[in-house]
Length: 297
Image (cartoon, rainbow, N blue to C red; front, side, top):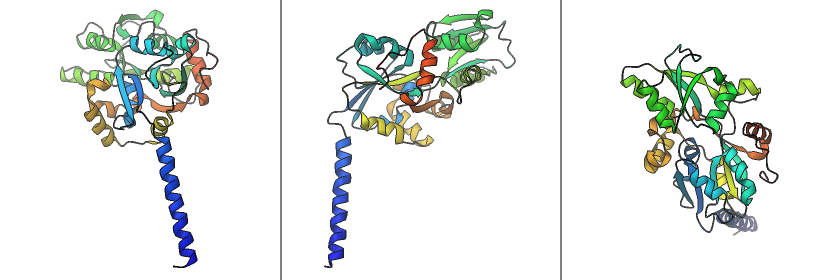
């Protein structure tokens, strides 16, 4: 065998060993544990659900999120939560740092085309939380007839049963509501996109606001999961397949078809917190929250 061939084989062997070593070192020794709300935040994690190195638990509401973000010894490595909630609770334990923003708003006003928003009865959800504060910020709600319900599902029902003429809904529930109304012989449409209104009011480059973010426990090694979130691109068929396997109840979506068809309207995109610090600070101002020192590394 020639010297050149021996050298070539040796280099190939070294490269192969290096690649295996890099891959192995990036994989966690124990599964990375993630806690997330249902809906758009849960959908933002689609590329991780079938990975054996990641365990994802989803919850409705913010009670569990609040409890875990406040702990110094949480069992979770990553918590996806409303940006304002993570910022507000940071000082209690200083355990979870804001790593990235995952969702940039999915709020829409739905009703019959041509509805007069100054006189129509409007069902809404999220009182004293992101939906109400964003709604008030981008529109003159003081001159509107708004009734707040305990959940987006209750606001949806108020619209479908005629208790209200218009509803503030989140995607993909908004699309599901329009489809259900059509089955009942009613025509509904999206009247306002609150993310677009936010862009107009703030002069930002893109639609939306940092609604839900990814918080990482300070002592956790989660690079493996973060790399997958940033690098994985799923086709629509792949997304539908994962949603069907994981289950619509766990994800909190009407069905795979609607979830995928409204994916773009849910404004799901990974942005490193350090790159969008100004947008985060502006958003927190709505809640009279100052960006805590140390929250963003």
